[in-house]
Length: 82
Image 1 (cartoon, helix red, strand yellow):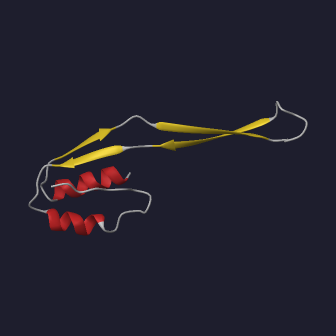
Image 2 (cartoon, helix red, strand yellow):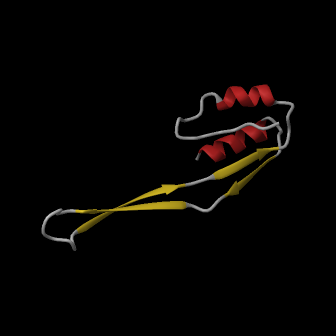
Image 3 (tube, one colour):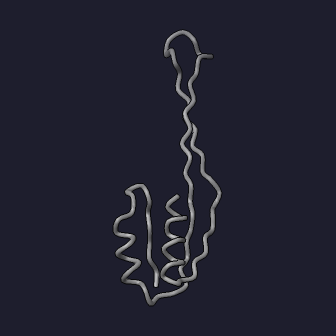
């Protein structure tokens, strides 16, 4: 969702962009429902991590891009390399 937003902004700023999706990471946690008697009663939880890399090919609009990325959601980590 946020990647499509960044791609639309890159099109409006006439910047070339490319996206790369990395494999999902899954982390599973298993807990016992009853700690004393029933060992077969277990509950599983799963956390999924998604990683996507977006590359912008133009450095002319770097200041505009920094201003746009300042209002990103907290759950998204971004790095800008020149």
